[in-house]
Length: 163
Ligand code: FES
Image (cartoon, rainbow, N blue to C red):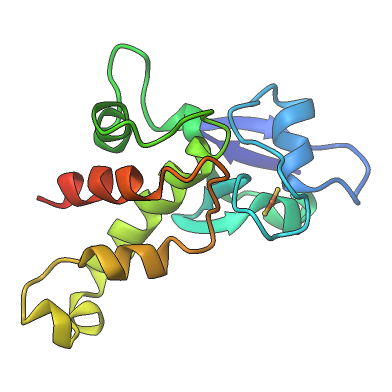
């Protein structure tokens, strides 16, 4: 079996109990994805599977045969940052940076969800505007913790990308 990670095929032949997180970090050398709690509580391990955000510590690699996985390494390069990466840099959306890959993957999925489902995202406090308010961003990013407390800068970065 194999997974398509950042557009490249990676064969998986290991212990079937291997989490997707451990497969990425240990077997694929994709260490941008971080291990925080390893129990689905911090969001540091967030990656995209077929465009949906997922805590990679809570799922097994064998469950994703043939699926498309995107990690932080697949979003941009040092010379060509993804708009979310550039906005996080501009707004200091991090301090230690440990949660940042998960934050950015999560934000990417959230914005795509919103773009694909605007009617369900237009709530009273949006007054009909087709974008998320800072409060809605905080709610939808609540699965990604930042121990440094850079939350307001993270929200500022995401707001800029929406504009
Ligand atoms: Fe997966 Fe914390 S390491 S949620």
